[in-house]
Image (tube, rainbow, N blue to C red; front, side, top):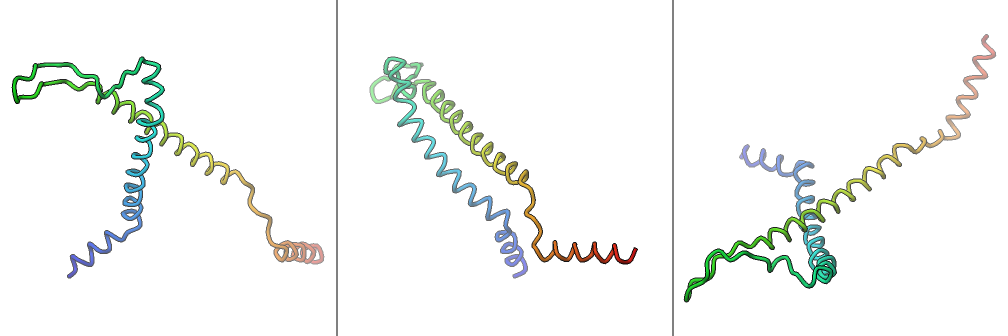
Length: 133
């Protein structure tokens, strides 16, 4: 039973839960960015390049014979994956940059003024120091 309790303590640690949430959100974010790339960015690029679809680009290595399919080197899928990665990395970079800017703005804000009670007590302290001198 000690091993089960140790595992439960490990699994419920804040860092593990945060990591799990990050992985799930990252997967969903990746799907969103992949959709943006495939459905929004690639059609205009395909239009500019004369309708070329990167995923259809391939190099025929061996012709198919009968029921045996052709052997191809699908470099277009690789190009598309690199393009997707670049856009996802740039989107994450912008997100991290925005978060860092927000943290800097929060850190640069001056501390709030002390409550009126503390100001009044400070004035009383100063008056008492003047009387004792």
